[in-house]
Amino acid sequence: MNLRCGKYTLNLNRPYVMGIVNVTPDSFSDGGQCASTQLAVAHALNLIAQGADILDIGGESTRPGAQPVSLDEELKRVIPVIEVLHNLSSVPISIDTYKPEVMRLAIAAGANMVNDVRALQEEGALQVLVNSDVAVCLMHMQGTPQTMQLSPSYQDVVHEVKQFLTDRLHASVAAGISENRILLDPGFGFGKTRAHNIELIKQLHDLTDIGPPLLVGLSRKSVLATIAGDDASQRLHAGIAASVISVMKGAKILRVHDVKATVDALKVIAAIQ
Ligand code: 8Y7
Image (tube, rainbow, N blue to C red; front, side, top):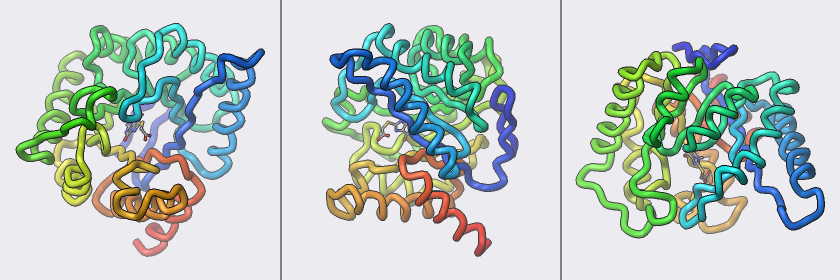
């Protein structure tokens, strides 16, 4: 199962680890922009040293209740990081954005993948991908980050997520994005209750029927806290369990904060298989 990813080809015959790099500068301190670029780059290189196979660079939080940032602010945060990293990184760089203009400029700056929590539904987003050769992750979300956790509701969460991802895959392929550039993601925590998230993990293997490789993001998410207790280290331990289960149910890429711990857990799976 090969994923075309700009100048990279990821042969997904083992699970890959995507390390999360959040770029959220302190815009009040003098020279904050430059400092935060350097911090983000240093963090990214540290994640590669820990074994990250992909870096995911994001400039706007999509956590529940988070407020949107302007296009200019998002560009100021992420583009310098990608410009610096693409000369230093030995692994593909993903841009976490739903804004077509950020996608376009990030790809021009060297990004090899687009991670879109809105699955290319913004006006113009499909076309940016059609005009490129980078990979794209299409994620399911019910509602918007501002409101999605207020009252998530489904008749059959697995069926509805599967239908949405199938529809977005077909729309992307029909627009001209070849299927070997596409990843799918059920979007844990994006308009889902604890029960919805658990049902999706349980039935994750069902989603592999659609075809493209699955990317999964459960790292430090609140569903883990509701299971293990709301403590950062417990979220790590619970997250490792969730990562291992996801891989055993067919996930090919894990989007995580804790790269070293995840890589170690995957080594255990590999040794047994
Ligand atoms: C996910 C994600 C976030 C996820 C993909 C967080 C940007 C919230 N979660 N992208 N982004 N999948 N593809 O807690 O689950 O990291 S942000």
